[in-house]
Image 1 (spheres, rainbow, N blue to C red):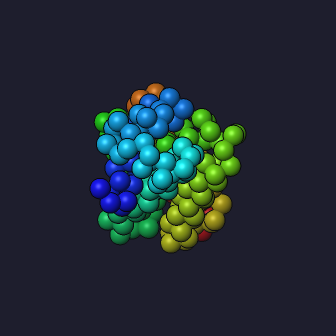
Image 2 (image 1 turned 90 degrees about the vertical axis):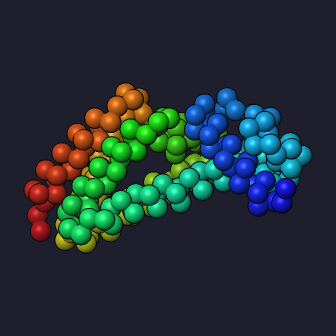
Image 3 (image 1 turned 60 degrees about the horizontal axis):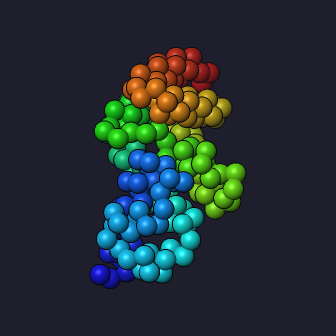
Length: 185
């Protein structure tokens, strides 16, 4: 097995196990068993578990933001694009195996002890906030609305993860609708 294949298998296993069970409850031997990549090869690819966690979060970030953007871009109206973020969140919250936000979960487990994990979480959240800011600018809304939308979305993510419900996305969407419609232009 070449390095690229071994890396992808390791990351696939890490994503399934870290997201499903939590980072601290999963050892490198669990990753080995789920991926079929030898422990020696795993440590050649990722000399420390922390490096595997960061790589998992980086890869997930690209896919997560790509899926969100693909959904939002299907809506031509700038205000509807903002609300589409919350529609996509509702869909994501309803997926089998949804366990909340991987970055919030990772920060909760490791953020206080792992600067690289905390940095990756901050990068993801910063990119999401910037994405919302771009949507707000396209709609001609004041820049402050982006931060408010960000907090609505983040609160929905946390609440959905805890309650195992899609309702927080609908509630946040309604709050976002009121915010967008009432914003000064």
